[in-house]
Length: 334
Image (cartoon, rainbow, N blue to C red):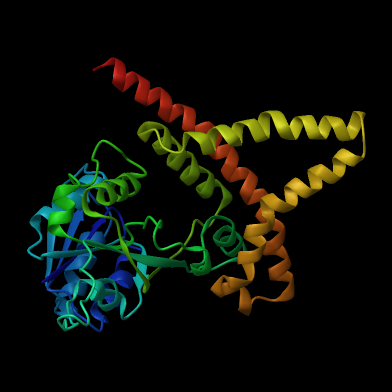
């Protein structure tokens, strides 16, 4: 049996899209378990109305104040399925998402003694996600921060919990999602799954579509909170140190050299900027929304990429030390 789980908090604008996509799955889940963290809008009423209309089996758990990690843990604990498929409110699932993300668990291959033995079924499966951009800014943001499929190395890919599946026993072995962490909780869960259960199989066609942040301010807040989560969890310290050295030492030195010493340093600065922005510009034509844009919209998206890249880095540099300070305070408290 497969249980689909997700959490909600004031998702009245998006919940119908997710429920519609679940109802349209080519393989239906045995149940859907939803944990609400204290919605004050019409989310709960919409869930009741939509599931009654679609005749979906949905169990709704009410846990005001629960963060997303606790909400997922409660939903998984309450689920009856041996296999848990996890998504997020705010996504739209491809019709074959559930079929694709659970396919590696199915043992359809018949072994032939001495000739063929099917590979062991995995304990966890990573799905994929694609941005559903609605504007030139969202298109540029997608290209700047989200990987495309060709960049994924399946053996090292750590999935977002907007598209992932695992055995319930795998979740238990990993001690669940870390409820002390408000952001980056799915990344720590991925590390625990890799350590305790051997990592993830990759299902690239198990696709969840989601809308990226629609304004620069919302993106700044998102990346500030992500970096704060990195600091709390003590993640990616080398990456953050490199970012500080680049912005606070290398770039000022190069700019000073261009002005005061040698125009040759201008070439070094331009080369560094090209390397820094090469990947987003390579991705930009691959964002689904890009193809239907006018030339002016495409140029606008391209022009936004440097601004988005620098804004994200500044947000990370501000958020990371806040997380480290929180971690230090927690350590002092014992």
